[in-house]
Image 1 (tube, rainbow, N blue to C red):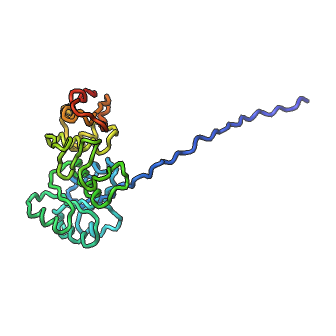
Image 2: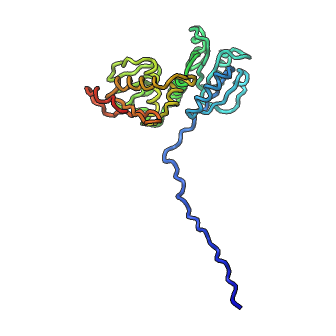
Image 3: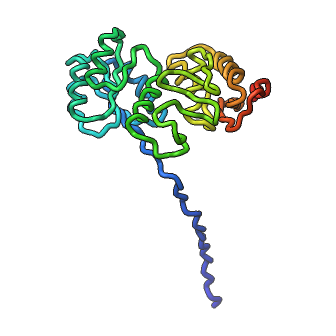
Length: 273
């Protein structure tokens, strides 16, 4: 009898893939925010905006919940008009517990409330209505003041807690909202300043139109984005020697710092798109 032929079994060889590469740089942990705000639309909009930029947000609606919150946090965003207690009392109680930065966010624009809040221990005060971009800038400013940067590239030697320097000629004082070129203040409109401040937070990073519009014109902007192009053109014209704002078709913009921008070449830096 012919011998029975066994079917050949196909053995599938699995080629191991390359090992996952570990990042050579230490990842910076996200900033943990305790948001104390009873107005749900305001809180949700602010929470979404902060999370978009990698902040971790714990949201509570009362002063009691804020004082009872047990999870760790790095900064507090505190509304003064809380349903159960005055936010100023919460501010005082939080300050007595430690040195975590407190930024008051309130519809109370009276100077007395600002002064009292700061005297009770608040590190900053933002009046409603505000944009997400402004709140992010305030958070980063207070974090810079209490946590000296360890990355030499992020804070050039000699700048300390002062203006941020970009290249050898451009400085941005985010606390005073002033831009200087070669020591001379550059006249910018409020939105031009907001746009420049946002794009220079991460030089070289590609920012979509949607990100920019939400950060600079706020999440509730429903108009055309052509206004963004107008403001980009203005910044190119005013700061042509020191920055280049590159347009990426269909996506957005990327700001690049010109490290050794020369003087007197102002007519050559604006045509980047």
